[in-house]
Structure formats: structure tokens, C-alpha cells
Image 1 (tube, chains in turn cyan, brown):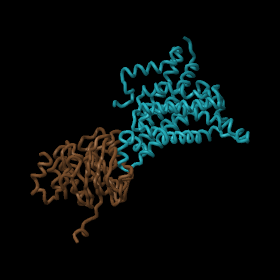
Image 2: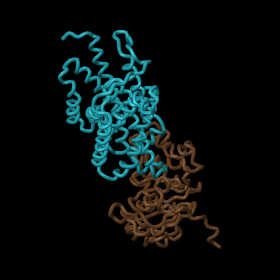
Image 3: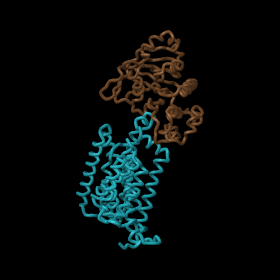
Image 4: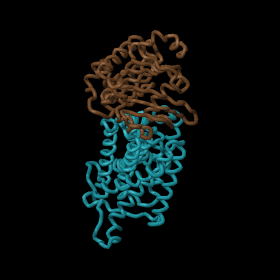
Length: 300
Length: 239
């Protein structure tokens, strides 16, 4: 067991980046579950859609329009794509999910699962299953010397950007008036509406916000993951385990759990690589035995 | 000519019916509340008093009949639009948001009309709330939660207050404080609909009492008739 510090830190960094994506995605799921009481199985497909839209904007859109030199660059995509994905999400909420709020959770789960399959099928039909690549923006290409090792600039950017997004979301939720409305709506939406808040619109916007988080994650993932129709579904399996471990409904909980599980995965790759793909699920099983509501979850 | 001098009717229900799922709870409730009045809904548990308030606000599963708030027919409006016509609601379970601090609970409600109380006035009325400003709603005592539930609707500019069982389960000293608060609100021109179990609390505060039974108004008793009709009231309330 000889391992250089460099290799160790490299695995840890990869784990941290994975953790950033877990954190962003599980935060979105937690926000949506809090207010809508729906486990959004479309989350992975929305993440995938964002990565694809970024790729389409960069490589396909110009030729389609007949201007081969036209492209939507990474920075523009980082703003526009989450908005587009959120808009599509809000249409889904208005047209489909809204009809299910009176029913059991299970129906929301089935519907969002079905929508995810349709979206994945659509992208598979249009673009096939082989992965597409996405060049990081020029500014972030190449390595950066962090003192004890070289890291790709883009990966550092992903870590910093996701931490900012996670912190910003936490701040919005826990420290602002808007967040107070969201927390109140999560606790007792009916009463909030009796105070004069337009709760149906708030629910639509919240769904849009949760989906936009998946959209941002998707664009950030485009340069470091293979862009395929199944990229979201694969990632979402782990994210659901993260959500179970952290407990649904806690913003801070999903952030901390997401980051730590990424790191634990990274460490497992160093010390016992064979277990690295199952370690999250083993932890999930243990947590379920000891604290069924999750580490940060509220007992219901 | 007496009619002309009376203040306008600000809240009225006619033949108000309401359902929870399949169960038919209100069978035609008729009440009229004039501006500045304090009116109670008395009755036994399950008579339909709480449901009457909820049906006015559009919080029951289904409702029919007529509800007018400040002259607007609201039977087809969603709850948030009804509230914005000037209603402030203090629910029976108090509805304090546990994950919000006292301060956040107090400042949460949207302003629906000009003339809402500044926070300082609310805190002057309920000084306990100032001491607990940073505590989460879930950690407040029952009395503090009740004060918070009442205090927060005063900030919104709502002039018609629907208060559901505000004295339930509270110590006598707090009930007294709430009684003083109601008197003060009345003197400041608020219109108050009080659902009460505690007739002794209500009889000195209200201008008029409605007794609700089996989802209907069984009796209407003006404050000056209470002494004469005390037997009837006691019989209806099952005291």
C-alpha cells in the first residue's frame, strides 16, 4: 500500500466533485419534496436535458440555423439553459403534477418517473446513446497548481461554483423573507394561502427553482461527464441514496450529506476500490436501520 | 331610520354549506357581522363553528351558498384572494410555523391593506413576544403561541379578525390578557368573529352571540338579552 500524496489528493478531489453534484441535485429534490410532497424522479432527466442543451447550443445550433460559426458558449449556457429547463419543468408542474397533489405520493413518483422515461427516450431517439463531449471554456482549460498538486482549472471552478450555489440556496432558504415563505409553505401551505399568499404560483416557482438547480448541475457536468441520455438516471440512483441518508426536507442536510458522501466515495476508491460503487448504498442501509428519517430528517 | 345609522355589514353568509370529503358539516349557516362588531359563535364541539370560519375562508373541501366579504361575493374565489379582502385568521391549532422564529412568524404575513399595525404596537400588546423574538415557533409555550397567532394578523391591515378558540387550554392569567387584547382591538375598530367554548370569557366581550348547532344557527342572542335568556344558552351549550 504505497500511495503518493498526489494520488490520494487526486482521488479526494474527484470525490469532492462528485459530492458537489450530489449536493446540488439532492438540494433540488429536497426543496421540491418539501413544498410539493412529490419525489421528483424527473430530476435526473432534467439534469441530462441541461447537459444536452448546453452541448446543442455549443456544437449543433449554429449549423442547424445555417450559421456554422454561431454557438452559445459555456457562460451564456450556464445562465440560459437552467432557465429553459426550469420553464419546461414549470409547464410539467402546471399541466400534470398539479392534478396529483390530492392523491398519494406514489402517483407523483410514478408520473415523474414516466416523464423521465419519455425525456430520456426522446434524447436517445434524437442523439443515440454514445456519449458526446463538451470542451471546457477556454478560460478554464489547462491545469492549475494548487501548491501540492496540479488540478484541471475547470474542476476547481466546478467545486467553487457548486459550493457557492449550495451556500446561496441555503442562505435564500434560511435567512431571507422569501425563504421564510418557502419554509412556511412546506409546513402548512393551506394556512399560508389563508393569509393571502398565492400558494399555487409559489409551488410552480419552487418546482422551477428546484429544477433549475438540476439544470445548473447539468451544464456544469457537461465538460466533465459523458453527455448521454442516461447520464442523469445513473447519477440519480446515487442521489436518491444521498437523500435517504440525509433525510428529505432539510436543505443544509442534503448539502452536507452530498458533499461528505462524495468524499467518502473518493476515500473508498483509495483504500478499497472494489467497494467504491456500493459504499453509498451500504451507508444508506445502515442509516435506515439506525435513523429511518435520515440523519437530518424530521421525524414525521 | 335606525337601519341607516347602523354600520355596514362587512361579513355575511347565507345558506352556507360545507363538506369535508363526503361528510356534510354545515347545513346552511346565516350570519351577519357589522363593522366594528364583536360576534361570537358558541356551541358544542363538532357543532360546526370552526368549519364556519374555514368555509368563509375557502378552506373546506367544498362549500356552497353565499359568502360576502366587504361587499364582494367570494364563494368562487381561492383562499388567498378571499384573505386579501381584509380577513385575518387565527386558527384553532394556532398555526405557528415551527421552523420559523417568532420574529419571522410575526413578519411573515403579507400586507393586504393599509393600516396594519407596526411591529412595535404588536409587541407592546404582547410584550412576551419581544423576549422570544429569536426562538423558533416550535419552542414557544401555548400562551406565547396564541399571542403570536393573534399578533401576526394585526400587522397585515386586515380589519375583520376570525379568531378560533383563542382561550383553549390556557392559564387564567393568559386568558385575562387575551380578553384585554380583544377589548382593545374592539375599541380600535376591528370587527371580530370569535369562536368560543368559554362562554364566561365571551359574554362580556361580544355584542352578539350566535349559537351553532348541527351545522346551523340555532339561536341569535344580543348581549343585552344574555341575562334573560341564560337558561336557553346553557341548554344549547350543554353546560
